[in-house]
Length: 191
Image (cartoon, rainbow, N blue to C red; front, side, top):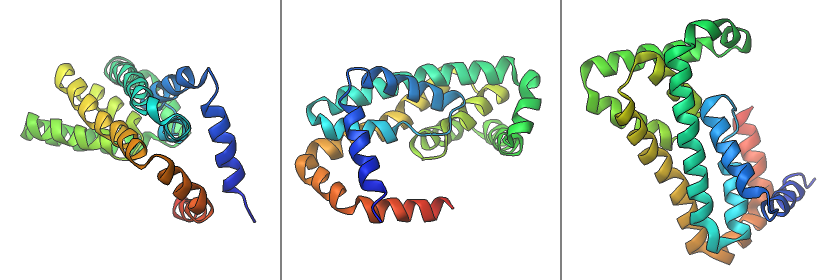
């Protein structure tokens, strides 16, 4: 049964839309604040459909993520106590509290260690919102926080662009060929 191939084809069609860059920026922004879907689900098809613009799309994604990181940090810093009940109802409070405790411990030990942990957080597939909120709650200094987000998330989106730019048609052909097994494996891992 082919499920992921048609979804992939639809994603490529959407990626060619004139509104796609704005939607990518909004998705990147939302993922850093509250939305659980990573921007790569839109960035990769956009870069595959227009490889020469892959770095531009990555820049838009990075800018959206950085703007979202600022809002997430501000919300964590100023509004955390007000929205704790919302997070509890969504089932996110335990995860957020764990990240807060971890960051407090690390920040007390070494600001540089905090910086590198946040760089790693920006690079990993863990939703960025957990780290942006936690950083604001803990009170990680703002400029090092933003620098760590730029480095971590920048590496992630620009590596995607570089891989697609270098792989070009071969990368797209390989993805088309293996989209079904990749989709089923990802679904199994998610479950």
